[in-house]
Image 1 (cartoon, rainbow, N blue to C red):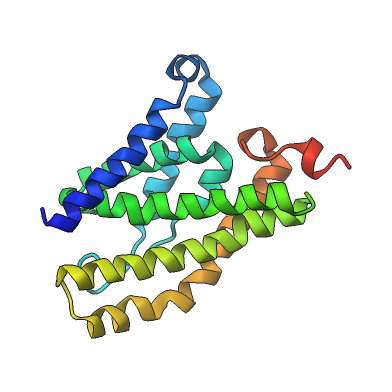
Image 2 (image 1 turned 135 degrees about the vertical axis):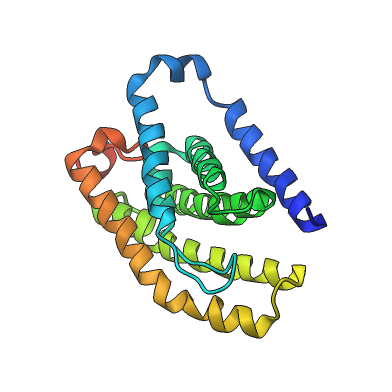
Length: 213
């Protein structure tokens, strides 16, 4: 492992430890509903992440689905669920074990953090309405998340010396405009269906705040 990979693994481990530390394990083990959401979401993400395309190793693209995951489970459980998915992907050889820290930090913690930041800012500073929730908490954060993830991961491979910048830009970074709208639409549609048909699955959504005015 390189120095950057080791550093990323350390930072990602700190986030993961912090998330696990503040989860009530006893309550989680007794709450079948929460267990089903966590493991069902991890399985869904695993399938979603398997559909990836790319010419060069590491420079592949796929839907993230992490904005809807964050809104469903909250910040801490979203990090843990994404970690379960990462381990599954590494176990079947879709990502390299030595890159777990980088993929975890840039590919999961960063998008989850962006989404939760948007949610907190909109909840406290913008009038709470259903369309505000859908667009400002799911649609736009998803677009920004995949753009940031692609750009930062491309910068990582450049700093590591894995690929020259022209290869990274032409085969990876240049795809950002093509990725943002589909990712935003996927997360926006998914959270819309959830808050309409299964609002009890969405941890950050409450009728009294967004519907009962």
